[in-house]
Image 1 (cartoon, rainbow, N blue to C red):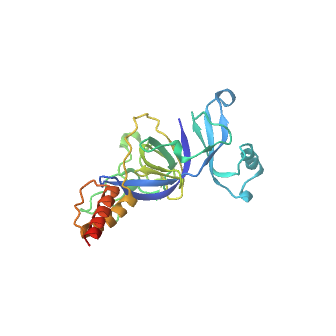
Image 2: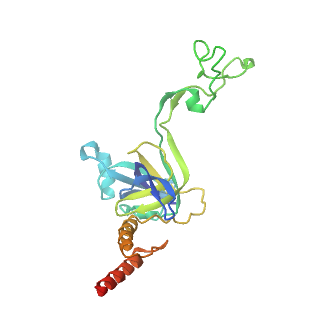
Image 3: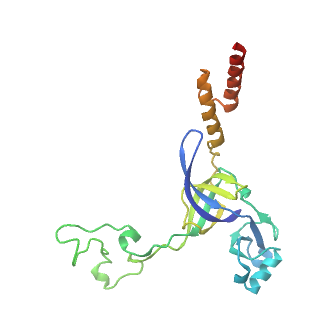
Length: 265
């Protein structure tokens, strides 16, 4: 098992070489510090405590400062244990390259809080009839449906009723990593993850153990921009541009055509 802590930046879309649009969530993964190593002999279970995102000195109490001093680091805002993660030493730095493109991961975060919600939004119940008196007064279309039969003479526990929606710990499983940018401390994951922007999340190796996917080949933007420029030059000399041609090939043809044009002069 392996994992890392990060912060949700937001969602965007990128494109593959074939032009397929891929919706991705961008996660900022600053270098994580191993703040504690838990072993089965000492703690009764195996885990690695990770910490990330610096915390202001004046917001940390002395026990926190002492705890992080053992790992030779400063107090952190987000601290979590990853169960069954072993093989790391106290104070070790873990970066985004612990994962690679194509791997499947589980992402855990706190879902968006939506306040007090009715049963239609909270449990996807059906809206009532909008005719024959429905839609107002004693028969509102969004009222709660049946809460049980009359023989029980009470409302049983677990019935679907209005109440607080969201703001709970949520895990989305088997999400695919599309790209890992170690230089900018970013991980791009296909699809959506729990929580609002700037919320902290934990990215862990997928617990179900499904086989990893083949890495998606993303479009090279620098190559596309260069090809666009070269195509314009190629038109002047009547050079045929073929599908799948690389910029280096087209550049060589343009240079050859330019040299030939100068020789003719």
